[in-house]
Image 1 (cartoon, rainbow, N blue to C red):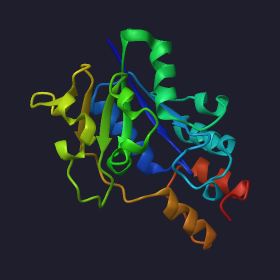
Image 2 (image 1 turned 135 degrees about the horizontal axis):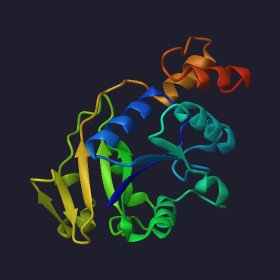
Image 3 (image 1 turned 90 degrees about the horizontal axis):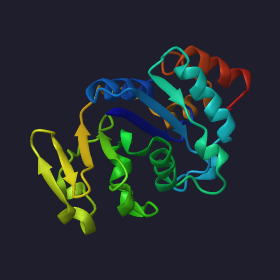
Image 4 (image 1 turned 90 degrees about the vertical axis):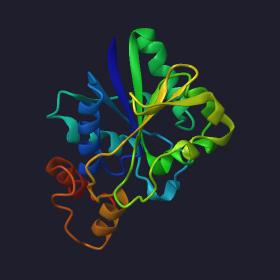
Length: 215
């Protein structure tokens, strides 16, 4: 059975932290592909800090161009309204059917707020979750981090090193190489006239400066 990773995010802008995370998850779970999905209108972000989705998608395309393991989806840009994960995952479940295992890749900090996501309980019936700890994030994933209302629906599987939902899909915490880079840091450096070289791909850096983004 094929296994595909879904990596959603604002990517404002995309950087080496995103790319290295995706590369490692690709290898850990023996995925066939990781699909990057820029959010058009992320419901949990302040709009004033986000440049148009079309710009962010173009930077993602530049960043992944040399990696055949990665691809770009514009599904959230083509859909009107807020970019809800349950609708995006549902789209890929319908597209691939049951012949493909879907792995939704998300940071631990974002997962801890999953009870604020639209129809979040439905998500665990659609796909697996891969939980990544961000650099400097001290909390280790445990059963206490699963949504309170759903904890009794999970059991820990030592062999798979994950919490398996009654639907058969799992929540898999994994440690990855810590690159202490964030999109916020990059935007702040640009605004302050500081160098962003080696924090993101050269093509993305050039795109930012050519179009005078974040200045």
